[in-house]
Image (spheres, rainbow, N blue to C red):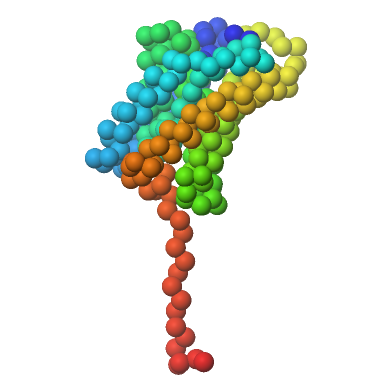
Amino acid sequence: METLAMHISNGIIDGPVAAVFAALALAVLTFCVLRGRRDLDDRLAPMAGLVAAFIFAVQMLNFPIFTAGVSGHLLGGALAAMLVGPWVGALCVAVVLVVQALVFGDGGVAMLGLNITNMAILGTAAAYLLIALLLRLLPRTSAGLAVTAFVSALVSVVVASQGFVLQYWLGGTTDLGGNLTGLAGTMAGVHLLIGIGEGLITATTVVTVAKVRPDLVYALRALKPAVPAPAVPVAGGAR
């Protein structure tokens, strides 16, 4: 089960595949930097630092998944997407992953491109797509915001885990005997449980921030409900 951790260690995926995903991650993060600069203002810039620090701190706290014999922690993609948006959010998670790999040895340095792709890019993107959908369907109350945060966080964790399955299929160093479906099912099951914990943490944090300073929640500012067009009077005084 240690080889199924979201922080991929060196040697789990072969060098060529790791290099391809490193290039992919670098390209996407470069685009995030260019696109995120448009969003940065006097609220978002300090908030990005706080979000990165919070994700780093909470990722150091693991909660046990007794049924799977492993432990899980916050990935942070959904939380970052809701508070600072998808572009800056992906950068926040990527910075945390780089620091963890270089300073704490959490995940292999050679595997950084893989880990960033899964947790910072896929996880954040999947979360924000769901956030954009749910905030248009659910009422913008504390309950609606909590459901949005919980569901997007849970799904983002499972999506990130399946990114690892794809990478292992492309360049896994251990032969699974064609049992890729079993790997996908195991990863999905374990990370579904981790996603529940992530969803609870994300929902609690976002709702707390929204109650105090709703203007600091990027998703509430950027994803405004559609305003129906005003009725146009018919010329000629139609009755």
